[in-house]
Picture 1 (cartoon, rainbow, N blue to C red):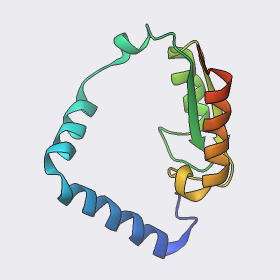
Picture 2 (spheres, rainbow, N blue to C red; picture 1 turned 90 degrees about the horizontal axis):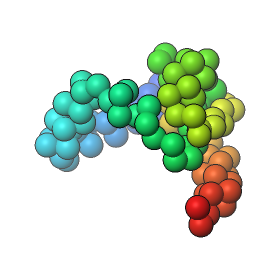
Picture 3 (cartoon, rainbow, N blue to C red; picture 1 turned 30 degrees about the vertical axis):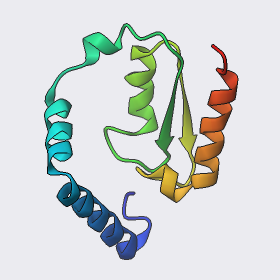
Picture 4 (cartoon, one colour; picture 1 turned 180 degrees about the vertical axis):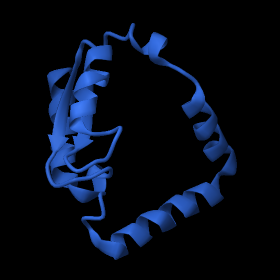
Length: 112
């Protein structure tokens, strides 16, 4: 979140992460293991519509600029919405607009 939302928000997010880690250690281990596996060769072949949501204030490597150079080129049938005022957690920092972006995408691709 780029420290924009204050110490209380940071403490809350750290507590959430610790609770999730403690609740399901096997899932956390799988997440970390899978994150080390390369997937780019598999990803380049995906032609399904993909909407990428990025917080305006997210940090590298999740910035809009880097996303334009990476994900948007890897997935030719993708688009991106930048969530203004949000960092890495747009679903919590800007829930109404994030939900709008998801519903808009679903409606555009319904039945396809």
